[in-house]
Structures are given as structure tokens and as C-alpha cells.
Length: 91
Image (cartoon, rainbow, N blue to C red):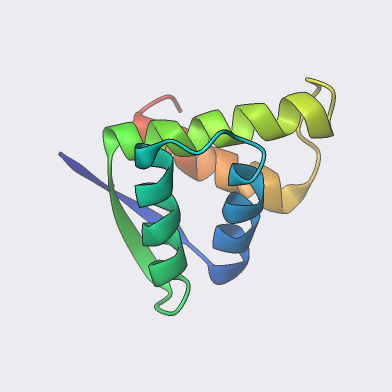
């Protein structure tokens, strides 16, 4: 099942920067390629649920180091997290 995730180019750039902190696995590489291709065409990005969970894992890894495991306070990052949670049905 595909999940539609509406991301701006700025949000995609942030997600790609978060992915750099993780080990590179084939699924991570596929998600990076999809994000890179989607930067040229703003709109909804169609991902599988597993791929959205990978985005969530990138966010968790990033915030564990960037914010020391604390609350997210950057509005751009909070917007991305909200979209990921909504896509996963967690909000």
C-alpha cells in the first residue's frame, strides 16, 4: 500500500541531511533516490509504509544526536515529523 506524503523541496533537503547520519542499507538508498527525484517536482511523494518508517527512523536518529533526545523545537522539522506521523496513522 502506498502512502502519499506531501513534502516541499526544503523538507526533502532536511530529510536527506538526516539520512546522512545513518548506515547505508539498500532500502535507505531507495528512499534517498526517491527523495532526490521528488525535489524537482513538488507535490506528494508516494512511498510504501516501510519507506515512511525509514523516514521516521532517520528523524529519530537525527534528533537523538541533534537535540539530545529532547523535544523538537524547529518548526520545519516539526512539520516533517507531523507529516510522517500522519502518514503512519500515529496522529
